[in-house]
Length: 97
Image 1 (cartoon, one colour):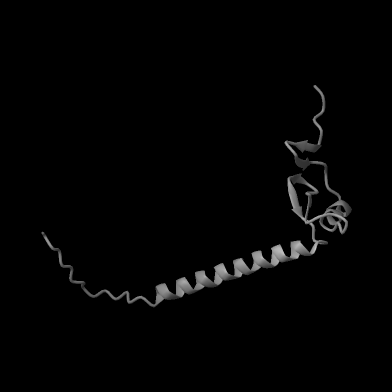
Image 2: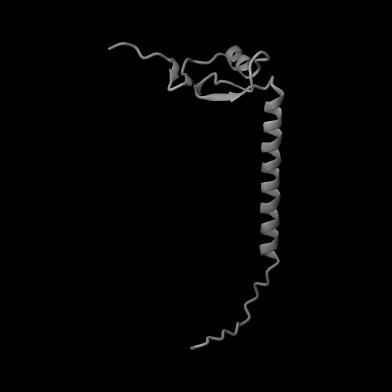
């Protein structure tokens, strides 16, 4: 049986399962002459090219959305604490119409 290739493309999506070196890892995330997306140094698909200014905008937007989510989750937890949870009886009225 023939050896399977450790890198290539399937349906236009690149893959690379060769053991990555430190140099290849660093150089794959910083490619000034390429676009915003570049092939991943290990695995399947694409990753952000940190030499492209558009990648930094994507990271800033993602960070802002994450910050907003954590702040709104904290505010929701605080509003739950403000609810009166005393053990007093509650009157319930049921209408049988």
